[in-house]
Length: 252
Ligand code: SAM
Image (cartoon, rainbow, N blue to C red; front, side, top):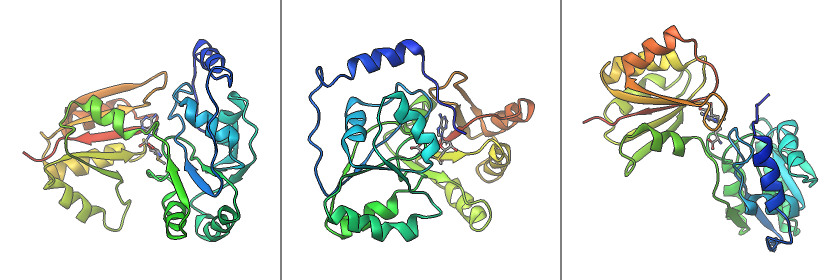
């Protein structure tokens, strides 16, 4: 179960600010899909506009309704929810498009961060566009942007690779990335981070500079910079815990 953190004072401050009297409520458009980013750890990282959309749409599609209910409850939002995840997205997309065509307003959220970024969402967004429906994507939290900026590597050009394939195609993807001159951003799980660092060091060379940001916005947030070999040694000595973004400097 995902852990959300929020200092009590932050939360009460936000709840206090988030009063319809102080902020004009948005006009929710019918037949519109709103793609809404949610916090990647710290509950305070949500915009007023996102809260307003989530409370005013007719339906919120959630990756895991239990995870999202925690967030919605924190903000006193009782909009009906429905699950939309990688195991049902193919069979539910057509029905959702029909509902949208009939006029309902829908928000799509994932467990954390921006939907469709290494999360379900792309299929529904594409189907809505193909059906001529309006899609409004709100800006907000995602893990790769803070990790990229914190790495200190060039940010003018970068490639976001999400998760590397686990088996099929992994070797060839790594070989392609070894030649990449732009900054490379990867998502990784704690179980695979050491293996990924070893394999990246093999194809890119042990001295390639890299940066790992873990537990962004949470209590044990940290960013560790060094060569691929140094990072591998660090996480071999300190068993990796939490969520990781690996950023690798492009080939010189
Ligand atoms: N949609 C999300 C986004 O916009 O970042 C990504 C979801 S993906 C299923 C989960 C991965 O995102 C994690 O395995 C990790 O690589 C990264 N991630 C999510 N939250 C993070 C955090 N607080 N700190 C570091 N990485 C995080």
